[in-house]
Image (tube, rainbow, N blue to C red; front, side, top):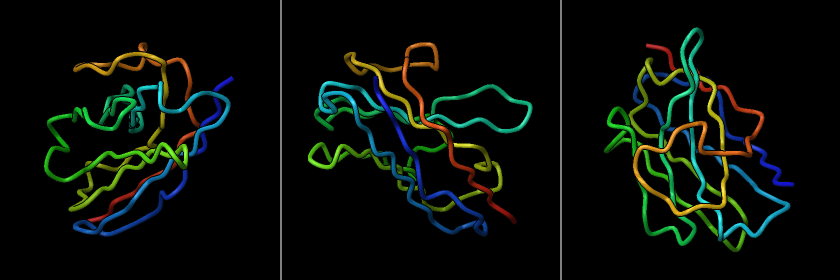
Length: 125
């Protein structure tokens, strides 16, 4: 049973930075592709970024490229999302997800079987 616990959300001003963390347990962390998704009120859950098990391969949504960075520390069973130059449109609940698979482009929520509880990120203008 994979367990994921996110932390690091909060309320910030446009242009600020936040770092989200997701600590995993219950599986061999390095064999799992990890993803960050977000869901705004009334909208679908969308991919933000994914990272392969080794941490080498990463893919980002176009809307966050150049501003967000996904990384992982396999020794700490933790994946991070560094969010810089935040915009009001980044406001959403951010979810961490895990699945034992090879990372690739265009992964969606249906590709992941394990999810965290979510953490709220609110960006005001």
